[in-house]
Amino acid sequence: MDDIAYRQWGRLYVGDTLLEHVPCLAICINLGADNSAMLFHCDSDWNVRGAILSATVDEGKDRAEKNYPGVASRWIDTNTSAEAALEYFDAQPHCAKCSFCGKRPFEY
Image (cartoon, rainbow, N blue to C red; front, side, top):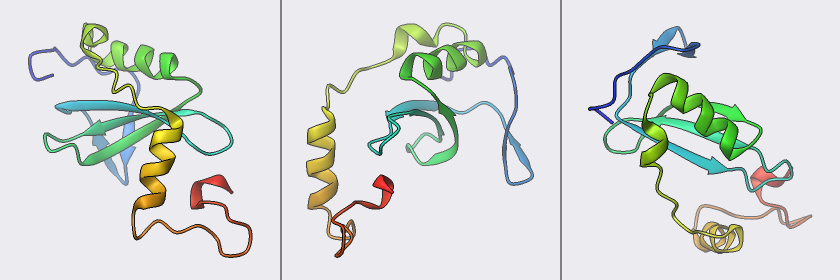
């Protein structure tokens, strides 16, 4: 997104630092109960620098468009289902479910 002009709309603080232009954006759906979406502001290696909660993916895209006019044409759908994402999560050795109720950490 380095070729898209950044136009500050709103403010995103990470600690005491105002996060401004970032090279990469991603939108992910919360796999917990509320199914909200997160707009992630990432560096060039896709490390998350900051995030904004949105009610829906479309709301997250609208917010991104206000900061990065023209980004709407750049979104790439990964075509990953919630079921596939949960299977991947469950396969990770550090991502355990609660031994009492069987819930994942984000399902509480």
